[in-house]
Image (cartoon, rainbow, N blue to C red; front, side):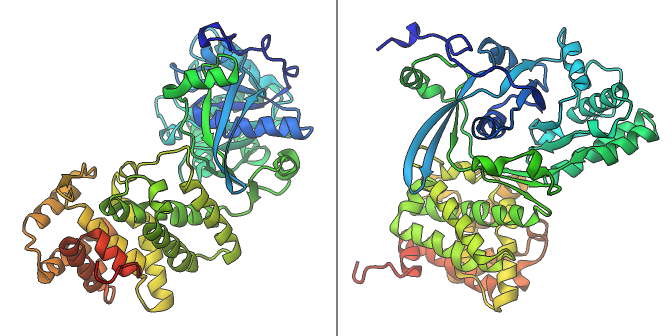
Length: 497
């Protein structure tokens, strides 16, 4: 076997690939996520259908990876690791759909601008971070290029409008992947704002509205990225050097809120991809936030105080695994409007992802800003459950109590590195400093926390029985310890132990 230093670099000479595809996709962003999620799917569509589409990547910031991308003739390897069809699986593929990368900050600006004249161009995709879809008032039409992504897109679309004389068939389908709610609507709003600010005219604005399709989208795949700690091992396995290897999980989901005719232009279903084109993506966003994110936030303080450090350890543990399953199946899913069978399939996928043996997902990495996360991810399930059942959801309430104890900052004598807003940390610090270890003391502490309307958006003490039940759990966890308390709650206590 060759040593890594002796291996050839991945490029179109060392790796036989198809001829470059027609450039039908303009992609703003060259980071790990887009390459392991969007471009991986486009590559699948090329290989398994007759989509025949190339992706030209534009670097959205002055510093980026397109130079590395071009050295490798736009080829790179995606390694997928995780549970697939019930078993651990690792597989890799060389993505071939990217044709080139362009850095518009310099001599390549004209090359970038010329893309607006391509008649075959049809799609725009982006991931410029959550801060990328933002208005920069200093952007001008004459800038080369504009600072903001929406500014760049507006100028690009105006050039296209001018070149094709407002031809309605030359509009584009724009699918942003930034992790903000209703990202397509937000992007379109800023583009229209620039069109008005730059006085680009009523005809252009009408063309924007009528000939272009801005889609909201929800993306879901965990992408750890470049595996720097084991890159030499991976390159030896691959048999070539690749400076742009990207690692992701097996699971993927792309929900696109758009017109149904988009299925014909984006034939992901023919490639067996988990891409859903829907009229309303809100239920999909809600189920992700409540089930996947909600389970993460609920299990974090419970698992950590129990002595478990990773999500994988938690879901594989007899007691914790049962606690999480019960919380999802019995307390979260019943509060959602989507079909129960569909939600249970999604929950199965979530649990498989949590068990991924290739990823060590530390619960402390989830614990950042846990109070605001509980409000967004778990409190809606609690409130809906109470409204439906006129009773408290036992597991969610226990996770809330565990969260309060977690913010005491101690795990069996070991300090917890709490990370939250200063006001949250100082409040908990003051409350725990005066806690006397009694049930009355637990009630006093709990009532003060639940009464923080600036944290929860309401006074949670008004929910019948919540303060009492939470305080009881706080008292038991602090006096008996998490392990004994949770084992007792879930019926796993051993008599006489």
